[in-house]
Image 1 (spheres, rainbow, N blue to C red):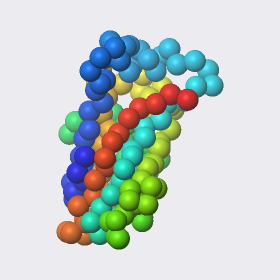
Image 2 (cartoon, one colour):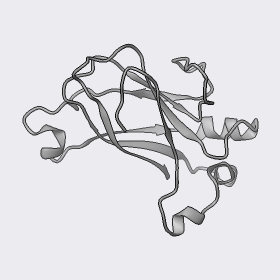
Image 3 (cartoon, helix red, strand yellow):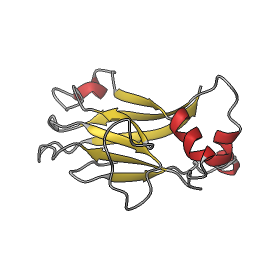
Length: 148
């Protein structure tokens, strides 16, 4: 996922194969066992140069909604940064320390599901706080949902 100076929306889709037939995320959230948590994991973060901005992350933000940074937004799950993710001397991946960030989406997903606002195909929205450096070209290599 290439990030820019505008919000980017990433749809969650099951990979092809047996996983594609599992429960839709909304029903999965409803059946989540006590003590279990859902996380969105963003892996392989990289940028050509430091973007110089934070990126706010929202779970299932309705299309056309203007993101509101901070915990008051019922879709807000956290902040993504690219500190030390820029590609210098081979970058983090070459050193075997690929950068990642995880976000606990359990509370947000359960609240949206309980109020019947969780969409059938939830998405993740990543929005910059300000304009990133033009040469930054920040990228999130992979985004997954995991249960722990």
